Image 1 (spheres, rainbow, N blue to C red):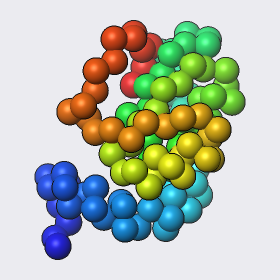
Image 2: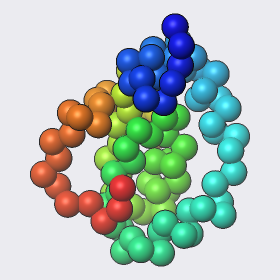
Image 3: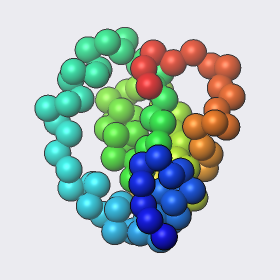
Image 4: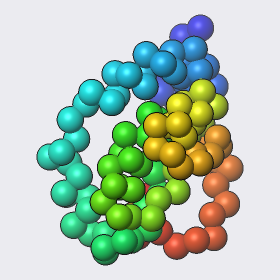
Length: 107
């Protein structure tokens, strides 16, 4: 199998097979300098969609900040790990399956 960002099925398979390793590594990434640049556009207690949430690292940060968050990931294994990590139900779905009617303040 070759991995390419343009090969969605291969990407999903990669994340399924490497979910725990990816989860653990992504939690160690310091995003503290990036969050303020995003959140300055989101009202307090605003609604955030974490699309392709991976480990749930960002979802957890937003939840702890008082934001309303919906999250999903295309990898079933990552969605399960993120659900446990964030205590939020993380949906297992892919971008082409999005059907949210809700309005979000940021994605």
